[in-house]
Image (cartoon, rainbow, N blue to C red):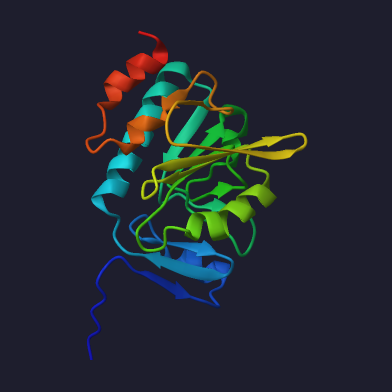
Length: 204
């Protein structure tokens, strides 16, 4: 009997070992390893892909000009321990920690991660990933919520994490020196041209 599941959907397979996850996963696999479970996501929506492409293009182009860090998109696991290898939509590793980037995964936490909420479970990132990211000590965490037009930024300080939730205005990165976005860019029906935004960020 064939079972057809209409997206958006989220499929959870518990009781999977880390060895099995890395044995089965490849660059085309649309799943990640969270708390000893494989989480299978439905195909990303157009909006999710637009936001991903926009932010990845901005950061890649900016770091291509300024240097100092490496950016990776989804499908590159970030191994936190034997039960957690999440795959953030975007992760950034400072140049001084680039040696932790192996051909298959990042060994340890990134310096910055960006997650874009998906239709399959809009609260998954905040509910499950955010506490683990904070436990791992990631310096900067962006949670992009396109359904409520809110961006949540968590920044690590000596006293713990500070949280900023914004719908517009300029948000500057604590990890990528000199990089910022106008949060309102993210909520426009047609996202602005990344090159134009990059020029604005660079002050050109």
